[in-house]
Length: 557
Image (cartoon, rainbow, N blue to C red; front, top):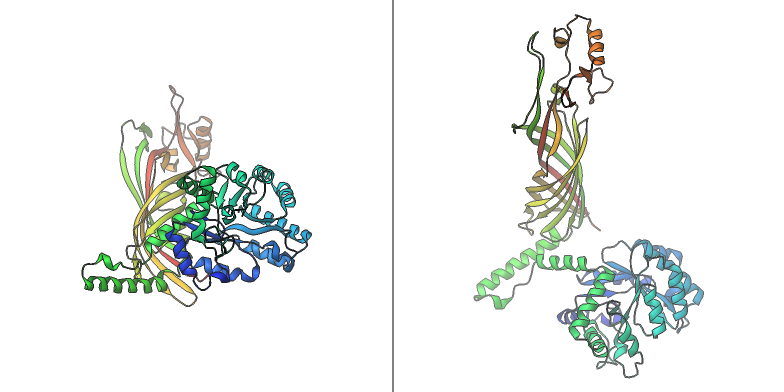
């Protein structure tokens, strides 16, 4: 179950908040969304939510406080939209029951916060008391296809429900549906199963049989049971449907999955019942204490890191030749081409090419580190000797590193991922994907202003597929050939001989070096019309071996 609306940050829970949350999670509450009410209490709300993995929050200004704010407060709402545990804009809306603020002021700030929600693709949590018509009119005016949200603690009639649903809204029900005087059973019955959720609105709206006492998130089960009774559904069906709807509206599925991984990876208190001997239990407790201290000092401060990467890129190519070329031998034997019909394979490598780039890293859990890296390499090597321009390669990597010993100062890091290589060899450009395999080590160096985390990684980027028809060698026309009988039978001067050969189609300008006066021999097969140049053509598969030093810094946030 998910309690989609609980004010667990309020003073009513200060004395026993942890116990209240434990009861909720023991009652199979997966997550709790805590709405924002006023800027004055927002920092405390943030602290409460950040302390618990399964708490998420809204950000917004309740209509009760709309008369006390300025546009700077609205700007602050927008500034917090990108924070990791913010899943909604709310609680916002209109309240005409109390006379805390003029309706026109409430409507102004309600509209502004709706527009913030749309611009940041967040759902809205709407408070509505005695303001049905204005709420619906504003939602209709602001709905452009991107507005989504929930009318919380829904207590309006079927007409309001139908119009709210037509505007793309959801509704949620709370403890008031258990009261004897509740008169809107038909609304609960008729709302589509994928358009309603459950909430407690803790510490208010306490359901029967606890009415008159403080409400708390564990009581959300009572709301679900009452809905099951009204709709003639099973409790499990209500639980499953409302949980799926809440996860979809607030996009909680990935956040909850990451939370689960994080909980599994952090140090866990040993269970004494799992140990037959007291000495084994004491040893486990000592290890837990050491791991917990290391987690707080070495791991927890690492969240989002930035850095530079310096490396040495060894490119290994496996070439399957498709065209071989041989220069002339002496005066009488001209150059010749040979198309290769059977695989002729050779391997080549270009060692120690400098690689430079940048890295961003996110520490998902103590064991799992996600890393994105960009690298630039330029392969000149022996290509100039073959009259070829350098190969420029831009590499983007997305990798996952797994710490074998996360609570040590030095971590050993097997790693895998995907890579994207964009290559320009001066003639053609190619883009290919590949897979990553590697091993490395990192050192955590905490300071008062953040954590330095230098890593040494040896990584292999195995490019998938084959680059076909690649020019791997080029043989330009040279002066020694121009003077031969087979090239220049009339003994013409050099430039004249080149002009005649160009007109006759026996040579052409090197496409890799336009305008530089470099020519390649050209042959056109009279039977097929196929044109061949004095080049070696191969199909190439590539592996990049990139040992590198990455210097990461995780600032304190």
